[in-house]
Length: 114
Length: 111
Image (cartoon, rainbow over all chains, first blue to last red; front, top):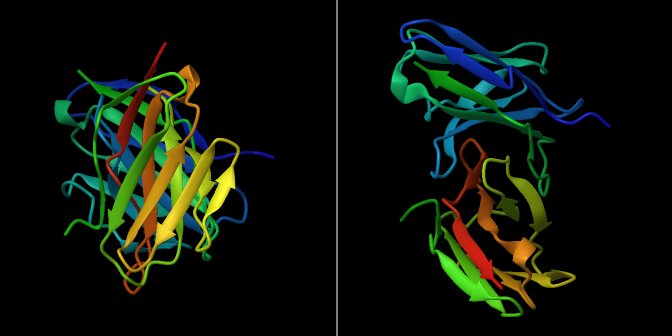
């Protein structure tokens, strides 16, 4: 079956521009997570959705970052006025919201801010 | 105490060696535990879930120690292809119940 799909796979943008990253979770998965990972670093948690609500958005680094989820499915992560330090791989993952359900990751969006 | 903590390594072992990773967690109410592996410049992939009674999948054995709040991963007869970063994952009960990743332990298996 279809896995987690992220688009675009690569994005190069100029400093100061806004970008929007998209995640299509596995059908039926109610939990959705966004992470980012800089080269050689660990996963940095950004935000977690349960359905359309975000019980935990503590990882968003600044108010330039926002995310939403509609219809309990697709999620978009928006970064406004991008900075060079925003360059990273942005990973989305989804799971069923029940004990023992693992996360399934998309291939990520590699964002480069020039 | 960090929510999920792992020895970052790196671990460098010869082929055929046995290697063990530990991961400690802070939330005593946690119920779900996993090990993931991440290859360079790839997304993390589920290696195995960790069950209370411990579980084995081929050369890989995972164990849970609730009293001491840690999980372990044992790799026997390591292969070159086992070289990767190994991430432990624990759910945080009582709050948002999100899954939290450790920073990962890097393993290199040498010929």
